[in-house]
Image (cartoon, rainbow, N blue to C red; front, side):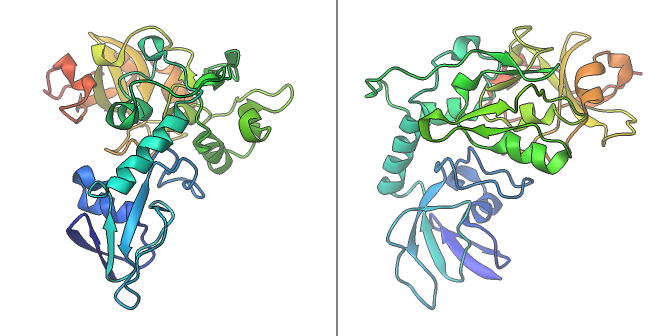
Length: 310
């Protein structure tokens, strides 16, 4: 076990734990944001750089600080380590710079984006974004394309976090999309004449932190803050059958996997549950989803009384 202090809060974690996960164990505002790291996906992290922190003390054995800011999702703790996150002006300034880079080519289309209201990039832009951009060149743009019967790709919004590639690699046996090109020509795309069509393909929508991959069966039907997210389950031979159904009245507008407070899915669901079961009779509805009361989704003020629909 190793003791680590983050912004003055001390915790003890198993050896090999990353700084980010140690901060998550403490919780609260000291948890660094993460746009590419996903605890259930092997190999994720280290790409977006939004989780940069300053290690002010390396360990008890070697108390020297690390010379540069480090990615907290990739750096493991050492006994006696001290870390500064929101208490460091250097970290706050660097994070603002990272957000500025993420927004260089990202379109300002939040009013028409289906991810609005549950977008991590929106939160980052609100906390660290500048009022104006210094970027003088033309933003890169892409045509919207359908990369499967259920998924719409809006590559212009993509921040290249690689999450969708990792989830396809680790959840399916026939990944047909990935990163094509290099540098500022890099893009998410399918291989020639291929489309994403497998039983778990819809999970790339859940792991996308922005509105680059959207549900074609839900696009433009409603805003998330008009819907009531309800925990529900069903007997499914393919997946756990545990999901969140987003309801307006007695209608189900969309179905998603259950996410934790960091927006990460623990139990991925199949396409049958996600896209084909849109009737309340298909689900046993357990009750209102426990969500952050500060979230815009909470503005629906739905009744939290548990109910069962058969």
